[in-house]
Length: 359
Ligand code: NAD
Image (spheres, helix red, strand yellow):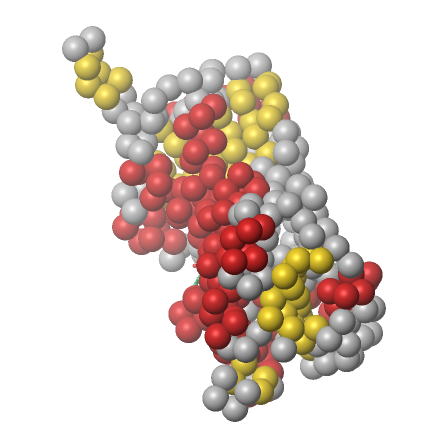
């Protein structure tokens, strides 16, 4: 049985689906793993030592493929070369693009449709990647701020800790809070879902209630979009907060909608000189939480530095690929019945059923 890993079609994304450490487990299940030539974050020789095969010939890559592993949506060039009934796993943009996959006789699993429940945590790539993005965000602040993050007492006196505001305390925001606290920063956070309060406080952050927003929890545990009145109340609240902070991390998302606008250019006049703003919501190249950030750019507006993330995990490509691959291995173990040597049907497991976009 052949597993294939096509080269990533987004050049800015230098992660890879599998690290060398994942290959022995797949070989033990009876799979042979083929990679399309690309620049991987691990040496080729490490893959080859563990049985991985590389080719730049797409036809040969796709020939007899039983399972395709991908980071993002698959190109038509790959889809049309796959044998019938090949299985595909990746962040396929299942909700938007399922018709494209249905046009072929394939079984496609969109990882972003995995239910965010405890049983699914081990295959939740959104969480593993978002956690690393939270780490990346706080590291960007540490690099770009012209202050130290922790309080420091020296013979020359005491420096106060930097004060960081986290807007959106999902998986990435919570990781940023935890890491920021470990680095000694003082952290406050706000989110539109009130259940987040306990999580923020358990990490040592201060939760700020948004006045005028009761609890904006939508479906599946995600946030809903705010009403225009609620948005106005949020903007007024943020304006009152900005003068008290040295750095802001924006990581607010609403599934199926554009990222909510939290900070506008006119609000920058309220920021302390030297403030650093990191907008994680631009990470896939879309508009983020700020009207002034751009994916992949660091801009200076007066004395404010604003960074728009763009495939930020390329900076952590080894760690990100390692975690992504572990999630994928766990999913393969769910999908492949090693005792019977056969695939599990999507209807036989609720997690598979939720992710399968071609049934
Ligand atoms: P996300 O990336 O969709 O959104 C990030 C955060 O932005 C969320 O906390 C959201 O409430 C917040 N947000 C949206 N609009 C906002 C606004 N206007 N202002 C401020 N904040 C705003 O979220 P995520 O990190 O993918 O997590 C989504 C959900 O899944 C959460 O409920 C999380 O706890 C849950 N989850 C559960 C598990 C599990 O195993 N049980 C695992 C991972 C995530």
